[in-house]
Image (cartoon, rainbow, N blue to C red; front, side, top):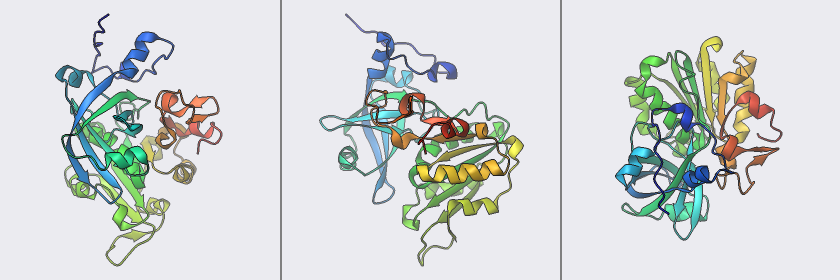
Length: 302
């Protein structure tokens, strides 16, 4: 029996955001589809993080593959396993997938040893996404802690490409040390070309650091937001979510106007291993992007 590659409407956001029905054989075949990719570039960001640029080899599959900001893929290293990674690039670059990967375990350790030209497999995209169209006409507050700046790049690219659809854009970024700052080479273009207001803070400074020192919540003193017309996107360590979102909520920002990503809980990406299960909710299937109201009603989510 020949399996015909399904035709997707790549301009239909609704169809892309639907959760697969894992009891439906045809839907399962789509989630199991592996896109063969070649590593076309590797950027060493820090000692622990690298940015991988992947190219989908098959031109038909390259046209089929599309994603929305906040979604993730399963990255397969043949013979070693696979891991979930949020996509860290532009939704408009067909056939190209950017992934920022931190070296923390077996599979990520192997990935960090790979060179340009190596072949990998990806499945997906999976999960919910940031509702960028819903945010149209509003101010955007992007808050990242540590590696959380990586999944934020997808909504940032979306805003770049639809800049007239949004009002003021603030980026608040906090890390433990100056050496852990990611993508600082893009900060100037975000400021000058797209008129973003960017604030960076570190918890532990050194002699080379000329910026602010403290916690990410200290940066709220430097900005003024219209809570009635602002959406917040928060990515980073789970411990950060409650402090940041509680502060914004006390300022009057509604819980359903704050969106966070629980990607760090994920493992298999398909709701099969149950490692990401919170109550009766699977982070990888029902998330990873959820509004703060939903998260606060999930016991032990953060």
